[in-house]
Image (tube, rainbow, N blue to C red; front, side):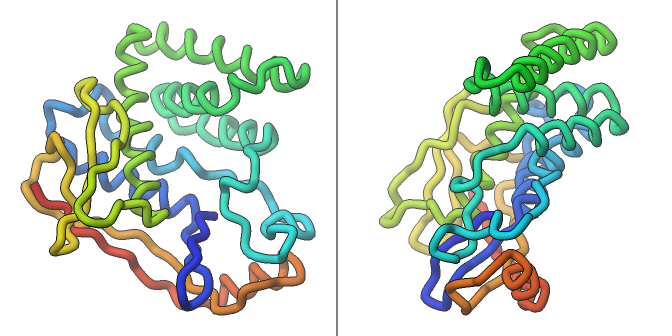
Length: 241
């Protein structure tokens, strides 16, 4: 979950919804900045944060009983394996991009355990097999993955309310076309990205969220019930050149 403190309590965005927002942003890119296998790329971007681990007791809570933001919950090997198992059925390209994402997330943990090392070695082997099957170079794969990372980052900036005040710019990341992009929110609350990578001069994106007025929970079941009963609302952003 993405959990933001707000005056009313907690604003909660499921990470799967954040993935959909990332795919919406990718969908709007100029055709010249799109990569090969574009439809499958959108699928990979939308699904890159799926297969979140099942809560068992208080996994979804902080020690104080508040809903836990994903940054407080380390990625688990169980979660990574489940995601890689699922994407096997979505084609080689989706598997390749997702595997590159797993390498990005977990390579720093190489050496922690035999299971982690085996998983990472399996990803390298899978990536090479996918490249061979798709007849693509490592560079082409890295360029496509850069798009995924860039859309993921911009989606997180929006979902986590990280846009700076006073029209100050925030670096997104190196992304489509190998350029470094910046984002800022204008006084009229529209969002501007520089350089502008999108096909349309103006468009709107949105993400689902829920508000929890209750600040503390005893266990995961209580939190899950509150999320289930909460009204689904939409955060919307107008992006303008």
